[in-house]
Length: 251
Image (cartoon, rainbow, N blue to C red; front, side, top):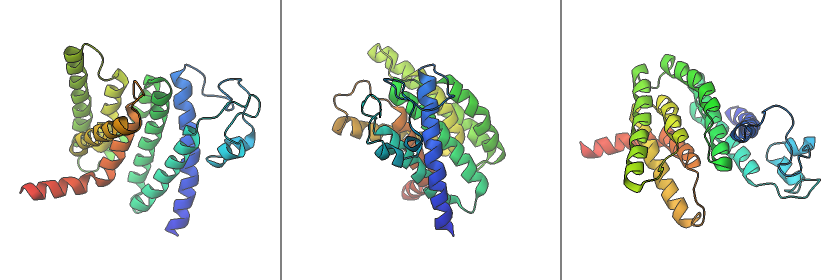
């Protein structure tokens, strides 16, 4: 039964991943989020079968039916990742419906801002302002530990990222972090709470360093939000176990 529900959650996750990717990309360029999906080059409306998450990309042959421009593989990849996250998280939290809902809300936020950061290196304030009260209210009333640790996590994440940006500006005379990344970590800190927020940043920096050195040598600047997303997911699922192991090792 759980596996069947997880499959349905995969389908829902892939659909929502497609939607919030569209929202993030359109808001980053100041476009309306309403209306059908269309080709960025010729603005030809995507056929209905091309809107099917993951499969639609292959039905279109990976290109626009009108102008033949290639469609980025980013879309089916994110749709698949979104589906996997929704399904795996259900199997992890099937006995805690409220926490599952909170986690899905967080995933939707991160899918939207990841898309906008990948496309235009922007984290839209509109997205943050929409999700902030939702995540804040949910986490205060349904905390992982205690509600005030969620607020501490938010301020700690924001403050630490702000200090990093300030130091980078003073030391290297250029922006080391975008303002959107700093504000985003306020929401991440609220979701993960104080005990996991710094671990998520450690994972994000480590993954970004390895990926940048191995796969993205010629890409500059490298969008950081996808790595923040990955680091936050790792911290959420594995952070408590890692911290328990680490503290047990020290003590």
